[in-house]
Amino acid sequence: MHDFSTVGKVWSKIVEFLDRGFNKIKFFFMIKENSEMLDKNPVIQQMEKMEHEQVVFCHDKETGLKAIIAVHDTTLGPALGGTRMWSYASEMEAITDVLRLSRGMTFKAAISGLELGGGKAVIIGDAKVHKTDALMQKFGEFVDRLAGSYITAEDVGMTTHDMEMVRLKTEHVTGIPQSMGGSGDPSPVTAYGVYMGMKAAAMFKWGSDDLKGKKVAVQGIGHVGENLVKHLTEEGAIVFINDIFMDRMEEVAAKYGATIVEGDEIYSIDMDIYAPCALGATVNDDTLSKLKCAVIAGAANNQLADEEIHGEMVKEMGIVYAPDFLINAGGLINVYSEVKGWSSEKVFEKTREIYNTTLDIFKKAELEDITTHVAAREVALERVAAAKKK
Ligand code: NAD
Image (cartoon, rainbow, N blue to C red; front, side, top):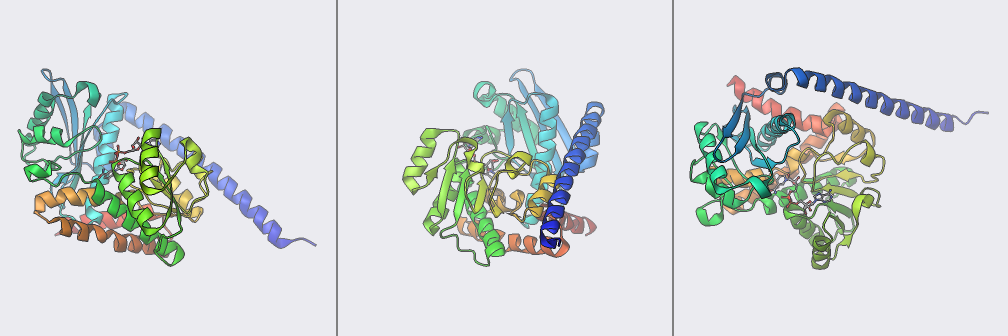
C-alpha cells in the first residue's frame, strides 16, 4: 500500500523545488531586461517606471561637487529625504540608488501618515576624502534652488556638522544639531520604531508581543542597532550581536550581556527573530537557505534583495516580515518634528503608532494572500492616490 502522506510530502517538495527554480529564472530574465533597458535609457525611462517627478544633476568645478537630487513625489508634501555620500562604482549605480531610495521615502512618509513626499540626494565621492565644508555649502545652494520642494537631511556619509554647512545656504534642511534648534540624532527614535514593529510581528506570529526569552539576532550594532539591543535586553530577550568590528561587538556585549556571533554565522544560528540593522539586501537566496527565524524585523533599508521574489519566498517559508520602510520610519518622524515643531514626547507617541500600523499590514497581507511588503506598499500608494484626487 502507498503511504499517501509521504507521497504528498515528496510531491510538495518537488513543487517547492520547481517553484524556486522558476523564480530564479524569472529573476535572471528580469535583471537582463532591466540592464538592457538601463543601457539605452538610464534616466527618464527609469523615472517613468518608478513615477518620479524630477531629477536634478548638480556639478561644481571649484568644490568638485557631483550630486543627484531625486524628487519622487510631492503629493503629500515636500519631498524629505537624506543625502548619501558614497563612492559609487559608476554614475548608473548612483542614479539607480537615488531613484530607489527616493521612492522608498514616499512609501515611508505615506504609510506613516506624514504630510511629506519622498526625495533623496546622493553625492558621488568618498566622504572621508572628498567632503569639505565648501562642497557641502555648494550642495546647500543646489538644494535651495528647489525652493522647498526637496528638504534634505543626514544619511550615510553625513554628519550633523555637514547639515550645519548646508543650513548656511538653505533653510530646507533638517537633522541639524539640537543646539541649533534641530532634532539631533534620529537613531534612538528609529530603534524604538523597529522595536515596536518587532513586537507587532511577535504578536501576529505567537499571539503575544512579549519578547522575554525570544532569541533575537541583531546584525549591525551601530547607532540604531545598539539602541535596539538596549530595548531587547531590558525586556529579557536573548540577544545575539554581529558586526564587522570586534571591538564594537565586545563593547556592546559587555554593556548589555549579549552574545557575539562572528561573520556569516549569524544567518545559521538558532533564532526566533532576525533583525538586519547594517546593510540592505541581506534577505536573499543565499541567506534564506540558512535562516531559521520566524520573524524578520530590522532597521536596514531595502532588506529584500528583490522585493517581489524574496518577499514571496519569505511568505512561502511562513516567516513574518515587517516591511523595512514601515518600521524604520522613526528617524523620518524625528526629522519631521523639525518641520512641525513637535516635542520629543509627540515624536515617540507618533512612532509608537508603528505597532498598530504593522499589525494592520500583517492582517491585510494574510486576508488578501499577498506579501507584507506588497501590502504595505499598497497602503502607502493608496494614500498618495487619494490625496491626488482631492
Ligand atoms: P551605523 O553606520 O551607525 O551602523 C551600522 C553598523 O553596521 C556599523 O556598526 C557597521 O560596522 C555594521 N556593519 C556594516 N557592514 C556590516 C556587515 N556586513 N555585517 C555586520 N555588520 C555590518 O548605521 P545606523 O544609523 O545604525 O543605521 C543602520 C541601518 O538602518 C542602515 O541600513 C540605515 O540606512 C538604516 N536606517 C537608519 C536610520 C537612522 O535613524 N539612523 C533610519 C532609517 C534607516
